[in-house]
Length: 262
Image (cartoon, rainbow, N blue to C red):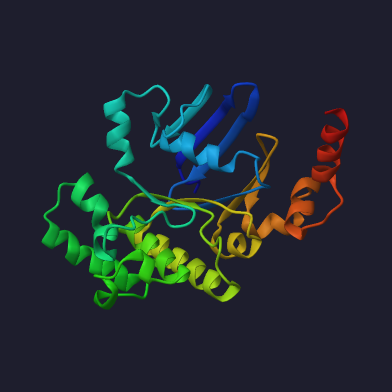
């Protein structure tokens, strides 16, 4: 039985002046699945996420979440839809001036108008889910290691029990062991919530660990998408070059051509 799609992107374009970033992105994310978007720097991965979130307005196309077109929706309807989302930002993006528990509870207090005492209780529970707890609740982000900050950011992303979670380069800046710990936690948290996940990364170990489906973005378009089990036999020279980190291939050949014509 085919799952319905939680997110549907059809013919999505986005440019900044003369710089064309997204050039007709088509991508479906089934309910309850984990989609990982791979691709080199500057290929439009972050812009794709921001367009779905409504942080950027797509120039053309359709972005549907639970059947509602986010591009055509009213501001109020978009704001209501955003309550379904959780987000782990690249670098964590914690508030330095707020203690850990308040960082985790931020969406509960300011998004759901929850009492601080109740919000703190939930924050502590979420911290425990990512292997931390009350002992660090009153510390500030600057007092934590990079791996601990990522855990706090993950706890914040899941604090409101979102239906959809976005992960922006979740393992950036972490050593391989801590990166694997974060990947394991992401898999567990997404599964426990029954959430739909979309992740952007260039870390192939991370992609292989957390993905159900993979899509490769190149030159503003999805050049291949399929189940994680098909990744090594994609039949796409772009995917093949990227996942094996080869210097020679269609990606670098195109970059060389562009440099020659510049």
